[in-house]
Amino acid sequence: MYSIIVVPPPTTEDGRTGTQLRLAPGDRLAFGRFAPDNDLVIGHDGVSRRAGVITAHGAFWILSNLSAHQTYVVENPEGAGEHIKVGPGRLDAPVPFEFSRIVLPAAGDLLPIEVWAPRHDYLAGPDGPDGEPTAPAFSVDRAKRYFAVLAALCEPRLRGDPHAPLPTVDQVVERLRPAWPAASRTSVQWNIDYLAVKLRLKPGPDTAETGPRLNGKKESLVSLALRFDLVREDDLVVLTAPPPQRRTVPAGQPAVPGPDQR
Image (cartoon, rainbow, N blue to C red; front, side, top):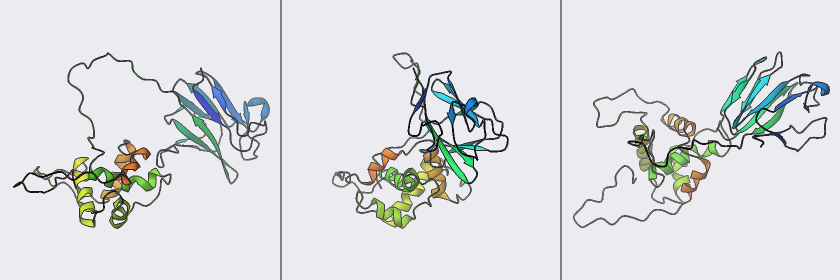
């Protein structure tokens, strides 16, 4: 059964434009400009005669760069700018992305080769847990206000612009208004401060440590959230969800919202 799918660049000499090449584990696909030496011929003067080799390995693949001078970049189109570099002559570089784009620099052009690794292998563990469960690395509740604030901060980069500037607090307030009509600069900034503590970028108020001043707080939050998939593109639905029902407060009890309710 195949495990890797390769989509050639728009310009090829062998009529494979728009087709998909499927590789089973262990299969190799050599690509380059010179037909006798390659399975995939890319008809561009800026591509090396023997440019590289893609090798399928189960749920992932490796890339060999046979060029003597060009560095290849392998991008993760879903990773908010995540990429790896494969230098000239590097052999068997493992690529960890499920969806990838090899970018070949070719005499002023950038030629893309898309590689998909849709196969997922999972551990077949025992039916029941063995001992105490492992505590989660980051505990977030997607129904809370702070998560909506985090999603609004991450939205521009999740929408496909990995280098987009982060929204200002005022822009976050406007973005949250459909689902949170009472959003304000104060409440949004409060939640940003709370997230910095919750995600352990700053020590909490109940500790004796003050910690260094956190410059670029929003950038640090977004970088952490995207790196560890705390916010995914499908989570952006919280930005348009109807506001949650207000809790009923018993008589005589102060109606002060907790940090997760802001």
